[in-house]
Length: 302
Image (cartoon, rainbow, N blue to C red; front, side, top):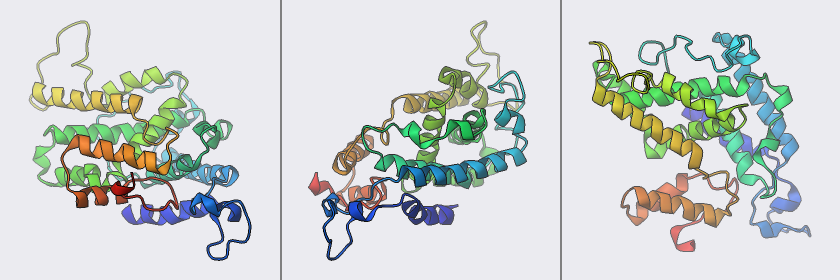
């Protein structure tokens, strides 16, 4: 998966088609208005939409092969497919979603190059995808988020070190830009394109297996011998609420920042979480998604 994402980085730069005038011609720079943009490419919206359409087709094929055809094409009256008898703690679930993250990477690279007056939804052709596409994409992303919350709460201790190790690599800051952060971005994007984004809340409660905890007609029942304990459920609930707050408030990639402003935003976030040395800050900024083709920015520049 990491190798696939590393290939997508330069591939997305090609698909975003930087124009010679905007990028400059490297050496002689004959005319053109623009070597002044510092080598930052401009977005070719048509090429970007074509690349995203290819990714959407592959995602649809993958999801149909996994029995999600009804969800994609609206074959049931319940468009949210609550109560589909899927439990993260009892059914197969994997951290590895390379197609989702490749799609999110293309979205991210495109959004970073969008002009401030162009909305991100212009990148998508809603008529070209099944009407349940956004809901279907959300399904596996929320499953992974629920799995990560359960592992962090100690629900999977009988699996030894295998599950904590996978979750560590998924959530570790060094790798989060190619895993967890892309998942959050794609969840934000697909939630925003849903007919009723508010319906995301009951979906999160069900996939995080917290229906009993959030019942309003009675106090939660005592957990069974194979169920997570009440403290574990409370920790999972905290992670679910943190995810919901992040989806509603994080604007790391949607705000019309310049490269320097986005770097400053990341640095403030970085220092707010814990104290760091100068070398740690440099390493963090080096891995942060700023803008394709942008000149490196160091803490001293801002």
